[in-house]
Image (cartoon, rainbow, N blue to C red; front, side):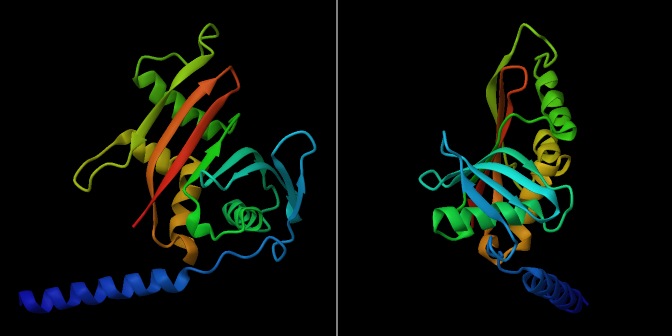
Amino acid sequence: MWCLLLARLLLMTTLINTQAAAERRPVRTASSLGLRISKQADDDYVRVDGPGGFDAELLIDEYDYRIVVANIENPGQAFKAREALLSVWEDQSGTSASNLRRIKYITISEPSVVGVLDAIWEAHGKDPEDEDDYYIDSMTVERPGSDEENWMYNRLRNKNPFGSGAVSICIDYTETANHYIDSFSFGRKGWDGRWLEIEFGVN
């Protein structure tokens, strides 16, 4: 009886893993997505625009394996914004998306992200609406162990588009098949300066 149940469980696990692997695909190139990348004249950022009104201002830091996102808009959803980030990384760094370790969002105004960050700060005694406290020291929320629960990590991972997008990066593309979200770091510099950095680990 137990042997039969174990065999069925192993079969189901194999089928799930096979299906997940089959659904992963390579990151498409920036040109195949129709992205146009131009250097900013006065800094190290690049401006990216493309189909469906896609528009982004990014810094590609190949030395620290990081993308800094100053702005990103994708109203037409001609493709996923996360794939555009990976495509620009590969185009500008000259390396595979498998080398990417960090995505940092700055000057965050997206309400769902602001709400998650503010809830965590409030739980730690900070008032994010205090106009006399424009700076909030950085915090890091690490991935909990398999038998642990962390509401902050879960909200950062699942309750905002930056976190859920990072989850999809880990499961959608062959280059990042071994990635997982290791930690979230965040803080605030000035009234509009909320920032969030997602760090990936690699199995």
